[in-house]
Length: 309
Ligand SMILES: [Mn+2]
Image (cartoon, rainbow, N blue to C red; front, top):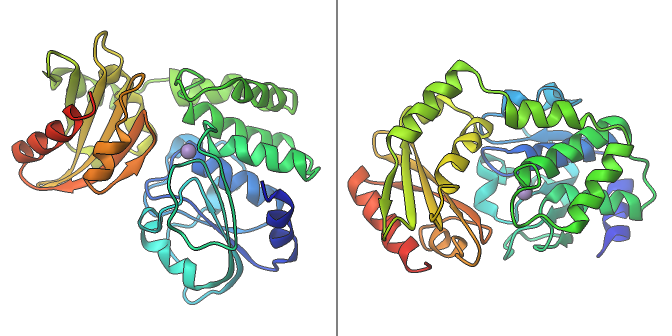
């Protein structure tokens, strides 16, 4: 790992921008905030920043619009390695002298000066923890809250198979560093409000099965009402039905535009159908956007997913 080279870039930079993927989740928000707490930076995310992460320091400083023609010494990309996934903030790639990337996804297509990438890690937050420890950077309570949020959310509170002993070791260290683990897990996983109950009703009512009930699919209409964190809460109800090996949640953005999330168990690799349909992700969690008539969209998705069963 080029931790020292990465830290050198950060140390010499007088102005830093941090960017994560579109529709930011707990991992990219937590990672960006932890880095921002190490060295002050402007954080940019394309899309709604879920309100449930408002307990994190600097949450209010996150920008969703680009400051006109501001230039940076360094751009740090977190939790993605794909230019498209930066959304409107692809523009930042041309506004920074140097680019540094911390990521844990497969593949790579951003041109960087230094890359810290490890697809075996369950979250970007774990990579940053290793970076801070390696570089003897003190992890404050606020940084621990941010990194614990990354790790807890990207592993579905340590339930996904991506979770490793390293994940637990890092979680224990963050607990010791003062992370408010009880509150973080409560607000991200346990609490439900009336809006979520309405969405969940819809998800459960719309479940359909394919391929001998090995694929479960559901549809969320009016998806714009739910942010990424809220949508994540629905996924488990479809993916964790006994016997289901791959699941599909279709969030309807507008009449013919959908954001699709795939989940799978064991060796079923849903990154393959996601990539075939223009997206990407991990073996057991991937996604993409698609346009078309709903029925045709469903057919296309199922045809790709059944190839990997
Ligand atoms: Mn991640």
